[in-house]
Image (cartoon, rainbow, N blue to C red; front, side, top):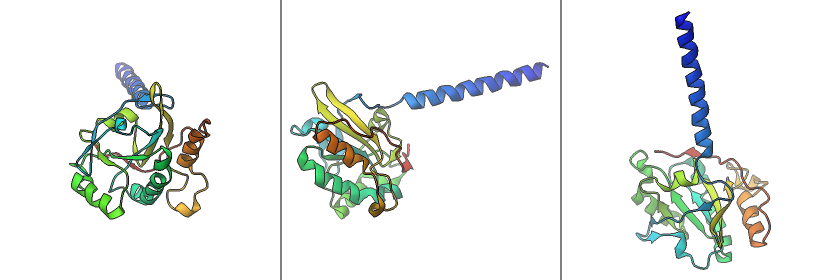
Length: 205
């Protein structure tokens, strides 16, 4: 009888712990409508970059990505296209590499420099050194996008999630989530779909 009570208690603790962990995980990171803090991260060109450097920006397409994830690599051309389309309209791409390079050597700063040069990145490719920024955003995947709009109260999160609805084939995309969101913001409208599920590799810690 005593053993049954102990087992019941252990089961209850495990269930409650699982609930608590899940609750914390869901609560972590920015939500749509939150004001995102600025950051200062090293770019592949050796310079430190902050959102405050972009005086004329209307907002940002903050994209957590990396060299080693097949999903991130598959989206590189689309990320480049987003910057080419929207940087001049006030919404540049800011790419951040969130992985721990000690765990994922292919995401070292040297590897980032090489990849940026090979692909001709025209946007900053920053290292989240110390992995302090991605948890604030609540990023969990590469790629994972957060669209920020510059307002009087700060950089407000307007969209969180995937770039589009087909990671496998750019030509088969039906819904361009990021483009739809930025187009809406440029017109002064509400973002039609504010949050989607990011599809990609887990961030390596």
